[in-house]
Structures are given as C-alpha cells and as structure tokens.
Image 1 (cartoon, helix red, strand yellow):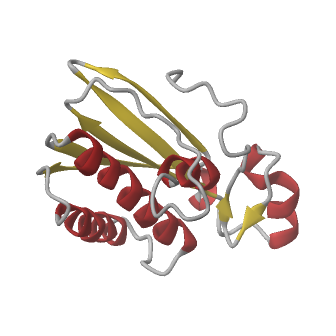
Image 2 (tube, helix red, strand yellow):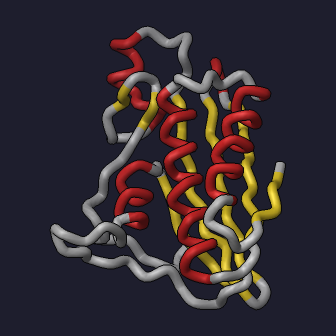
Length: 168
C-alpha cells in the first residue's frame, strides 16, 4: 500500500486519512491505540518530508500478522532528498523540532537509510495478541522487555541516546 505525496503541507492531512482507511481495511479500529499512534507518526514523518525537503515523497504501510492476533505495522516515507534526518534539541519556546524525538519515543523501532538519490525513513509498531490474558501479556510483552500499554508494546530509549542514526 502506498500513497504519492506532493510537496505541499496540505498533504499531511490526506496522508493521515489514507493511513486511517488502510488500517480500518485491515481490521484495526481507528480508536485503537495502535492506529492512533501510527497516525501521529504518519503526521510527523510526512511533515518532515514535505517541510524539510520540498520534494515529493511516497508513504508506504506494511502490515504483518503474527500468532494469535499480534500485528506489526511498518511505516515508510521515501523522499528525493539525500539529506539525513537531523535530530534537534529545541528550546522550551520552540514550536517545532520535536518530530524525531516523538518517533523515537513512540515507535518500537525506527531508522533511515539511503534510497537511490534520496532516503527512506521507517518505523515499526507492534500490537500484542489480543487473545492473550493481561497477566500473560504483561509477563511476555510480545517477547520484549518494554511494558505493554493497552495492547500496544512500546519502548522509550531516551530522546536520542544509543540510537545509531543511519543503521537500519
């Protein structure tokens, strides 16, 4: 599933609507934490592509089902700018510059890599199986050490600490 995005800030809203419809078509409800988080990540990554590159971009979503209802959703945004994503440390009064920190805090995994003349930025979200009881889910966390929250496994690794930007 992919959506061509023009270098226009109005495209961010269209990308969110497109992502919601793709998730709904895959059986993931719009009010499910996985869907809400993914739509926020779509906003951040598409906004970065549109605002910082001024180039057209492509948004892709991949869903893979695991055992007993577990799902991994991969979001990718490819653009024609070879400029690497640069994490920023905005001041308290800044109105921007927090997008990559948000992606880092909400996604289970994320990174970027060169793609042709441009780059691909990706992130993944996991949803634990919904048929497993809460105690078992808390204990297993879909095989991760991060806690599960309302069926969504998440990891917070610090704003930028330990993340190898450019490693996939």
